Structures are given as C-alpha cells and as structure tokens.
Length: 542
Image (cartoon, rainbow, N blue to C red):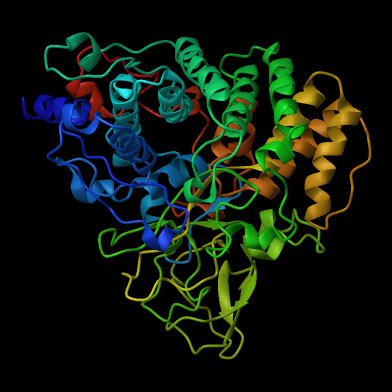
C-alpha cells in the first residue's frame, strides 16, 4: 500500500507545484525558488507565473531531492543517466577507484531491482508532469494564444525529450497526455504501456508543434531556452533513431535528412555552428555557446548545494585545480579507445587522459601521472609507483568536462558544469549518417569531414557505402563519447552483440564477459514501477 501511495504522489506532483527557476542568462543569479505552497490556480494567473512554471520544467532535469519518498537517491539521477548511456560497451572500463555507480551496467549484470533505472524513470515523469501542467494551463495565464503557444511549445519539447529518453531506455512506456489533478484519474495514473511506435508517434507530434511555435533565437536574458532549431534538430535525431532498431523503418532516413538540413541550411538563423576550439565547448566560462543545441544548466549555490555530480564521479582525481578532497572516479575508457584517435587529433588527450600533471591534493602538485596499458594503472613518474586503486585493473580517465576548479565553498562533489545533451557536431554526424544510408555518400562525406577538420584529424576520402558507414559510427564515438549517445547508438545500429564480443575480461572487475542476450537491448522496467502500477508489463527476458 505504501508503494502505491508513493507512486501516486510522484505522478500528481503538479497538484502542489514545486517549480523552480531553471534558466538564467547569468548562472550566478540562478537560485532555487520553491513554490511548494502554490496551487495551479495561483501560479497560472499571469505570464510571470506561466514563465516561472515553464522554467520549472527545465529545472526538473537538474533538481535534486525531487521526490519525497527517495530524496537521497534522487541526487544521483545525473550520474545514473550517464551510466545508462555510457557504460556497457567495448571501450568502457572501471575508473581509477572502481565502478560503484557504473556497476552492474558496465558488466551487463543489471536487474529490474537496480536503482538507476528507477531513478531515471521517476525523473523523466517529473518532467512530463511539469510539462503537462504548463500545456493545460498556459491559456488560463495569458489570453493571447500566440504568447501561450511559445510556453506550450517549450513544455512540449521537454515532454518529448523525456519520452525520447524513456523509449530508448525501456521501450514503450505509459503516455500521460493530460494534467493529473485528481486521484480519480486512474486511466492516467495507472496507464498501460504504449508500444514503441506509439511512444515515438506521440513525441513526434510534440516536436512538430514545438518547431513551428518556438522562436529562432532568444535574447541574452533567456539564453538556454529551446529554440525552433533545437526542436528541428531533435526531430531529425528522432527520425534517424526510428530508422534503426528496434523499429527498423528505413524510410525515416530520408525524413532525417530533410529535417536535419532544415537546421544546417539555416545554422546562422539559429546561431548554431562548430566552436573552433574543441576544449572550450565544455568550459564553464563558455557555456551555451553556438555548438550547444541543448543543455540543462547547473550552478552551485547555497540553495543548490549538490549541483552537477558527474565530474566528481567520472573525471580524474587531480585533473582540475580545486584543491579539495579527491574525486571518486568510477568510469574509465580503454587504452584501445585512446589508440583510435590520430596523434594530431585535438580530441584525443582532452577526452581520454593518457597523461597529466596532478593539480589536486592526493599527490604533490605537478607530479606527472602516465597510464601504463600493461599494468592497467597510472604511474607516478616521480616515484615510479602505481597510483589510485592498485588492487584492480582500471581504464584511462575521461576528461570531457570543464577543467575549471569547483566553485569556492562548494561541496567536493558539487560542480557547475552544464549537462550538454546535444551538440551541433552531433547534428552534422546524424546528417552524414542519414545521407549515407540514403545513397548520398559523397555529400555525407562533407559533413563528417567538417567535424574532423575542427579536430585536426585527417580528411576521409570516398569509398564504399559500408566503409563510410563504419567511419561515421567510429566518428560518433570519437566525437561524442561520454555525452549520452554511445549506448543509444549501439542499440539502434544493432551492434551490441559485436560490442560484447570485442570486450576483454581485463575491462571488467569480475574478469568475465557475460554472453550476449537479446534482453540487453532494453533495460528492464523498474521493479518499483511494476509493483506500483498493476497494468505495467515487463520487457522480455527480465
């Protein structure tokens, strides 16, 4: 009974609005302003209230302690999302201190009772709930429908993105297409799973609405809110995903081409483009730059004490000059992946840290730490000794975060790095892939080479369609590893079995690579949700 009650509390969260400011042009001004005592009647009385509620949708992606029944576990949602999208492939490895949050997904040993899936599921439906509150109340707040439509479009974009994540993680999921304001709405609270295709069709309609109602750009005071270009780019990526597995609808490759070209042909209009300095894309001093198509903003403040946990659990100890207690690095990449890059490729040593000078307190500042692929350990050049957890074999550190120090006064795990969800380089590579699959390989080559030119990597020459297909897939890993694309790509390409076959026992703490099973193509529906909603069915094999 308690599980049912807690489930219902999560589903009807907008009944008592917990909206917070989520987007500001200057992140130092971003503070959490809870509206825990305001009902929808009080919030949706003006455009100011409507805007506050809409910004609360954005903030739902980064809010900590977002459900009362599991406050501590929920702060780890961001690292769980990283785990579900970036572990469990041939280049993932333990971090220098082990695996923690990355297990059991790194070794394909997950179960339906694991907390990562449950927390990500809850976070996604929080976004859906907040979005529905705006969608079904916007016209009460403002009488001008054209003004209301912009807010509704923002809400529909965020709802679509939540469902895009859910359907790629879990397959078809319950579609909540109305605001829940009463416990009597059993058809929504205890809704059954839609099919995978039904879920995609639903989110596509949201994105189609968003692309027609959102502005092309925002003023500096609203920088970070989604634009028409963001919606078009996301719709193109959705089409590309539908072309692959499990739906296998090849006609959607051309839909992806058409939609993504609407973005690239009007990149100046949407203020999109490649940033010349790859490393600067991720700097906290250069956030929401022209390469960022979608990001959810983080800032450390007294009211947001946990901020972004990902750098603490993913990046290397001593890589930034925080001078605070060491990180708990639980993710790494294999030496084999580092070798995929050309030596001239500027992405290589920033993304996969083969050597660096320590800046943290764990070793003397300035000591050189160099990875030894024979022992699977970093070696301190000054002492000649292996460092970090020498009882395990671990991978190279992942470095694609800002190298800026943590904010002064912040907790050791509190970083202000934004969650970069979608970059213009990804748009170009999606377009290259879709073009190649529709027979336009020579045109596709142009877009992949744009990405490689920025990286100072050699330019590819035209070969067969299959040769370019492999190059594009490889390029997506080189460019986008760690950015929430890797597992999704592997699943839509249908290459998980090959990925597992290419894994080495040395990259798993268990020392054994499990056999492939078709059930691994989707994560299990969280047991907490199965127990709470009697209409939910489990994915095959789980």
